Each structure stands twice: as C-alpha cells, then as structure tokens.
Length: 303
Image (tube, helix red, strand yellow):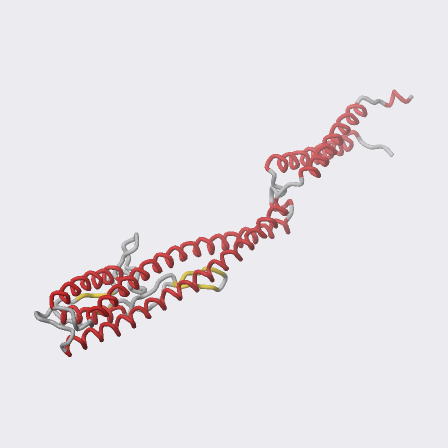
C-alpha cells in the first residue's frame, strides 16, 4: 500500500501534536498538583468538585455563625450572671433589713447599698454591644430595654420597652439559634426594690412598722422571682451552648470528609502522572526519530 508524502506528514504531525498536548497536560498537573486543569478533563469529577466546594462554603458559613452566636451567648450569660449576683446581694440586705433590731440609720445605709445594686442591674439591662446596639431589647436594638421615668411614683418608674422577639441565626441546614435574649420581667424587680428603697429612706423608718415590713417582704419575694427569671434564661444559654458545640463538631467532621473527597478528586497522582509523562516523552522522541529516518528514505534505496 502506498502512502502519499502529504498524508504521511499529516499523520506524523497529528501524532506529534497529540503526544505534545498530553505532555503539556501532565506537566501542568505535576506543577500545579491539580488533576483537572479544564472541566473537559473530567466533566463528572468537575461537577462533584463544584458541589463539594459549595457544601464546604456552606459549612464554613455555618461554623462562622456558630462561633459568632457562641460569643454572643457567652457575653449575655456573663451579663445576666452579674444581675443574679447583684440580686443575691440585694436579697441578703433585705433579709438583714427585716430584722426589727435595726435602727433607722442602719436601714438608711442599707437603702444606699440597694440603690447601687438597683442601678447596676438597670445599667446591665441596658447594655450595648460593640456596635452600639442594645443587647437585651429583643429585636428592638435601637432602644434601651428598660426605661426609667423619674416623674412616676416609686414602684412604677421602670418599664420594659423592648420586645421579646428573637434574632435567629442559621447555624446548620434547616437549623436556627436565637442569638439574643430579652430581660422582660427585670423591671418588676427594679420596681420592687425601688419601693423598698423609698420605704427605708423614710425618716425614723423601722422594720417593725407594718408598711415598711410589708415593703421589705415584697422586695424579698420580688428578688426571688427576679433571680429565678434570670437564672432560667442563663440555663437556656447553657443548653444552647452544648447544642452549638455538638453541631460545630459535626460540621467539622463533615468539612474533614469533604476535604478528603476534594483531595481525592483534585490532586494529581504524582507516581502515575510521572510514569505517563515519561511514556509520552519516549513516544515523542521515537516519533521524531522515526520521522527523521523515514524522511531520509528514497525509492532508489531499494532499487
């Protein structure tokens, strides 16, 4: 069978081009460490990589959200714990104030201490975050949680003006977590303590006076209710923290699994690629040599 010179040259050029393209591809794979340089290299693998990258992006966002929520919950817990501490100290004073042996000056001193504790709880309830938003007003973060009206009568000067809506954050696929807490109900404690302070400040006040004693007892009951209210909110934080920690661990495992799958799909098998590269280089060299050899042949060589 005769092969035209042009046809032969075309066949050789195609072979050289194919070998050179494959060598270039293998060289890029070895240099970059990535098996897929173009989607056409492995369409199915490329689709799987895209899906895994999207899932990894979602997992990363979930983990970032979890970290942010955990920090906020921890801050809220610390602030609420300080409220419980202030209320506990106020309760100790109220128990002491109920003792009928206290003098009027003793009660006056106690009222001054109660003022400091009342104001401390009020300050904490209206705490702002680093962005200047009120932390315990529900979703009404542009206004304080509790409002003070100096013109109202003692026992009615503190009002909760926030709301009880939750700021929900997505922390997983279909999973949300409230990142805030309201302090509705704390105003009741503030009003009760305010009444006690007013009663103890009356000149000649004594715990043996029925009205004064009634105010102290009401303050004690209100303090117990207030401590229970805030403690229950703190307990909810504890449960939420545990759930978030478990979810974060699960997401870390998912991320690790995705990384492993991406590594298998993306990374070049160096050993196999090196063997293939050497094979194609040898084939290319052999093709050049064969082309040069054949190119020097003539029909006169066989006559």
